[in-house]
Structures are given as C-alpha cells and as structure tokens.
Length: 447
Ligand code: HEM
Image (cartoon, rainbow, N blue to C red):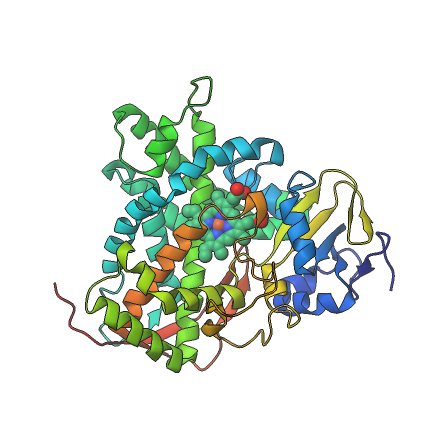
C-alpha cells in the first residue's frame, strides 16, 4: 500500500482529484469504521489535501493534551473561523488561554444552576402540541427547544427577541454551509452557486441581528444576568473591555457550537428509547417516582441517574461531533511516525466509540455500561473532546438533556412511527432526519 507520509498507511480507494471525498460524503460512518484495520494512524485524502486519522484512544489523548503542537486547524476550523470570527472554538492556541479565561466564568456551577431555571421554563413549552396524535418530527422539535433555551441563556432581555428568532431560522443554513465549504474544493466555494448564496445570506442575517442586540445591550447598560451581559462587563488585567468583534465571535460560537449538538443528542436519545421500549419503561419508573407530574429541575439531577446514563450512552453511539481536526504547528512524532508541520490530523469520537477493542459490543445500546462499577478504557469515550480544548458547554449540555429527557419520559410514552432507521446527514454534527414518533400522554399535567 502506497504511503505519502513515512510510516503511515494510506487508506485504499482514493480517486484522482477527489481522493476519499466520495465515501466521506456518501457514507462517512462506514468509511471511518474501516480505517483502524489499516493501522493506528491512517492517511486519507480530502481532495488534494492529505489528512491523518488517529485511530487509538491514547494517541487521540496525546493530540488533545498537546494543544500547542496540535493546534486548531484544518478545513472545518478554517470555515468556522471565516463564518463566525475567531471565537473560542476556532481560535489558535496563541489566543485560546485568554479567551477561555474570559468565557469560563459563564459556565461555572453557580451559573449553571441559574441556567437550569431557564431550562425548566423552556421544557414546559416543549410538548404543548404533542397530544393530538399526529406524528412528531423529533429533530425539528429538539432543534427549536435547544435553540430557544441556549439563545435565552445567552441573551434574556426582551430586546433580544428578534435576534433569537433570526438565529433560529438561519443556523441550519449556516451549519450546512460550513460543512459543505469545508469538504468541497475551495474553487467551488467562490462560485455563486445557490448553496453558497444561501449560506452567505443566512450568515449575514444572523450576524446583523446579533450585532444589533450587542448594541442595544451596550446602550441600556443594564445587567440581564445572562452570558452577553457578562461578556460586556469583562475587563482584562489592564482594565480594558472586550470589543464588539470579539463579543460577536463568542456569541456566534456558543450558538453554533451549542445548539445543534445538544438538539441532535436529544433527538438520538428519544430515537434510541423508541427502539428500546424496555429501557424507556425503566427510565419512566425512575423519573415518575422522582418527578410525579412536574418538570425536572436542577435539584432533581442527583436522582436522575438512569436519564443521565441514557444520554451518556447516546453520546457514545451517536456522538454529535463526529469528526474534528487539528493542524501540527511544528514537526512532531506521534506513535512511530514523523508528522511534518502543517499536517491536518483528524480525530473522530465516532470511530473510537465504535471500535470493539475499546468499547465492547459497540452497537449495543446499553446505558448500564455507565454504572459506576463498570471499567472503561481510558480515552475511549470522548464526545466532548479533551484537554484544553474540551467542550466548555459539556455540563450545560448534560444538564439540559437530562432534565428534558426525564420530563418527557415521565409524561409521555413514545413509539416510532417509521420502521426505517433515520437518515443520517453527516454535517458538522451527526444529524438525524426522519425521527418521527407518536406520543401518548400518561398524565394530566396541571395548568
Ligand atoms: C451534547 C452536546 C455537545 C457536544 C457533543 C459537544 C461537543 C464538543 C466537542 C467534541 C468539542 C471539542 C472540539 C475539538 O476538539 O475540536 C467542543 C468544543 C466546544 N463546545 Fe461543545 N458540545 C456540546 C454542547 C455545547 C454547548 C451547549 C456549548 C455552549 C453553549 C458548547 C460550546 C463549545 C465551545 C465554545 C467549544 C470550544 C472550546 C474550546 O476550544 O475551548 N458545546 N464541543
């Protein structure tokens, strides 16, 4: 088998010009699962560019823990940077520590507790029209729910209403555009194709509304107890505040990084519970005992153990962030291979989670594998990444998903409408379409 980078096997099947783009677009999950059979590091070709896929947990950890050497980079990150500005998710190592210090306080436990009150309010709006026996499009409902909840955590003021609506409308186009532009050759991205025009339009509309909201917050000079107010108050050691460009980049980053991944996780969790009615029933027994007819709150979390394990197992089987990239800042050695500077590396939580050497019975949905007494291979569960660039919203997402899932299952019995498995659209997240369920109301919920 031919190799371009010394000591690293090249995956077979690359075509001239496009390389491995076809399997990566048509059936990326199947393609990814084949790669570990070629080695611990495997070269693939994205068009003319070579990338190295890291296929062992301990090597992925090495990449994640050495964030100076393995810096943010690669086509997806470049597109995210272009689309949103250099916010926390896309900025290089040189800017990361300062940006992370700025945002970290907004994700403290004390803040999470406050945000949980918004989550509970939003969960109450979730199932208002589920009782009419019509099939529910779960992906759509979870997207609306996650975007409303996360947007209201970022900006709670009345004046932010139009921004929340616009962002909700535009984000799907932005997600799709970022992924397409990362995967397609750069030349295609500069052409006025309808998909490029739609993407630019969505990005510009969301950008303009978020800008207006920042200006109106600056003018009223009030603290609304939300993430935007906190960013506006932040001062560096020299007493300088953040500029609008940076605040804008951070807000857009949190919206884009947070909404779709959380919505997708909840959609998959509900799908899996429909496929496994026994687990759904066990979960209902737990949650009904804790909640009765009310909505779950922050204080219930310690008792919602199975709900949390169901979410954890869902993130293992369908990790929303399924393919992530780094770029080597300098020449470096990984395993036995010498990797030149500016090489793109790929790590895939999906690939690691589905390798039976590291997660036995990888296709089985088994929330009990997350019971405390169970042993796990270190680094073999990485839905939120790791190291300094680990997801800043991991506890937020787990809290939101656990509270929502527990409340839904306590109040509704869900069954799949379709026999077909959902269609998976791999874009920035592993997005399911066609998850339609019927919901039977189990309780009279007080007005
Ligand atoms: C189930 C839901 C979520 C999943 C699976 C997820 C997954 C991830 C992953 C894998 C990374 C690391 C990316 C890398 O290594 O390149 C990441 C980073 C990040 N996530 Fe999340 N995420 C979720 C929810 C959220 C939420 C709710 C927010 C915020 C509201 C958020 C904000 C971010 C940010 C800002 C980063 C960049 C962190 C940094 O570089 O310091 N995520 N996420």
